Image (tube, rainbow, N blue to C red; front, side, top):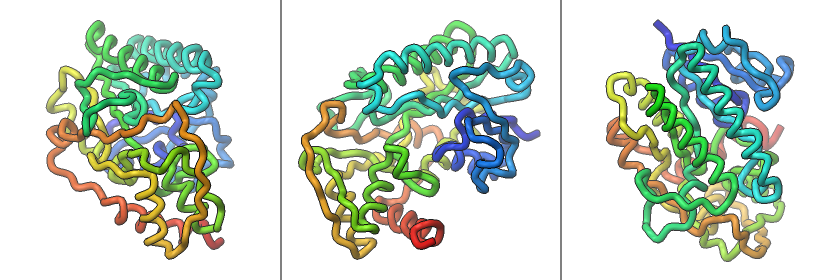
Length: 315
């Protein structure tokens, strides 16, 4: 029997790829988001879809009762905007999650999958890689908000026997990501380099991140969810990344190599909300799903570039 899965915020970049990955694996997918039906992207047009303003509307009990799994992808703010509107994330995201968890309990739905942030919850650390059992020290409100949501989910597991799962996702890139969204260094740099626009780098370009091709991230999550019924983890928090760090300048050079274009770089002062180095330890998720090889940065950007050329660069 197909598992029924509700993707909250499923019309966005990550949600669309998750819908495809889980849908192809046999899940019965329902997507909710703030897009009107006429504006739904073609790649999710065949799934069940309904409009909801998540932060201002509640789901009907019938919708929640009909699900085996709820995946929460939506946030009211991003890392940078959280500094300017710090109260927003606490008033909206945290309160709304508690409301949803209470509704799930009422409707006997025991599992939420929460896509958290591998890039912000850890903060600045001295270790080479970041593991799930480390002390977390976020340096922006977005990271604190995500960490608070994680703690709430784990509390519900402890108190009410729920089986909520948390994935700390590193920096994904790939099909469906928009530079205009304000997130996604690889997408922004790729488009700007192709069209001869300035590439803005904050600091000296030596900030290091763990970049993962979105289809690899989705596959790692899918593999876990397919196995998770057979083995439940006491602390179900998992990093999703490649375990490999890449500097901003290395990203620029990789895009230059793949596209044959030269970046027009503008350097600006480093931002205090950006951690200096963020590379995820993925040994825990690999222990759960088995050996998995992610695309290298060059492989991933090349694949993404070929997709972009076909889809929208030269339309």
